[in-house]
Length: 284
Image (cartoon, rainbow, N blue to C red; front, top):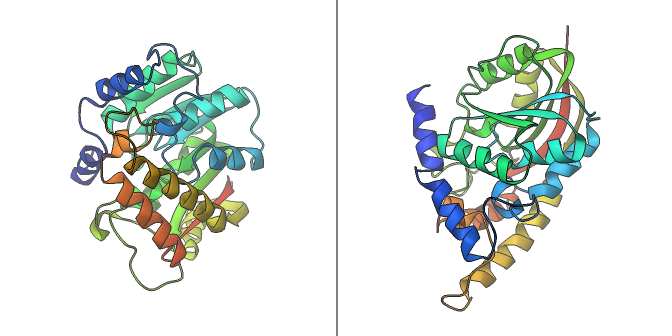
C-alpha cells in the first residue's frame, strides 16, 4: 500500500475505534453484540444522504438476489450490510482503513449478516481479486480519496464480469472555480482531496471501458439532507451535559465532524461541489 494510502487510513481512524463504539452503544442502552441495522445506521452510513441515498441508488440498478458485489471503500460496512439484508446479494467490502474493517466485521456479526458479507484490507488501485469476480461494483464517496482514479477504474473493470456494472455515488467538482471549504469528511486540506469534474470523471470511465447506463445529479437532494442534519447536529451542541447524545458520525470523525458537516453544506450551496449517482456497464 502506498504511503499516501497509509496516511489516508491513519487520518480516517486510529486504533481503538471498535472499543470506543462498543462503549458508546452500551452507554445508550444497546447490546453491542446483538444489534439491528436500524440501531447503527448513524455510524455505518458515512456518505452524504445516508441510508436514503444508498437505497435510492440500489433501486435504480437492478440488484438481484445471489449477485456477487464488491463494495469499494466500504468503511464500516453499512452499505454492504444494507445490500445483503435488503437485496440478498453477497458482498465483499474493501477499504484501506484497518480500524474501519474491524468495526465492519464486528457489526456484521452483531447484526447476523456475517455469512453474506466479507471484508478485505485493500487499496482500490490494486484489488486482490481475479478477473471477472463480481457482477457489480458499488462505490460511494470513494474515488475522491484515490490519487490515481484511472488505475482504480481499470481495476474495477478487471474485477467485473462481462456486462457487469459499476454503481457510483460520488462527490465531484462543482461549476464554481473556487476551491471547496475545508475540512470536509474526506480531507482536511486540498492536498488530500482528489475531486474531479463530472466531465473528467466520465472521460476516465470511458477510457477504462465503462459505458454510462444512467447518470443523475442529486446535489439538491444531498443539500436538503445535509441542511436537515446540520440543524440536528447544532441542536446536540446545546444538549444537557452528561446526557447521552444520539449516535452520530461524530463518534468516528471526532469533534471536527460538526465543522465538516457545515462545510459540506456550504460547498453544496456555493456549487463548489456536486453529488452524482449512476451506473456504468463494462464494455467488451
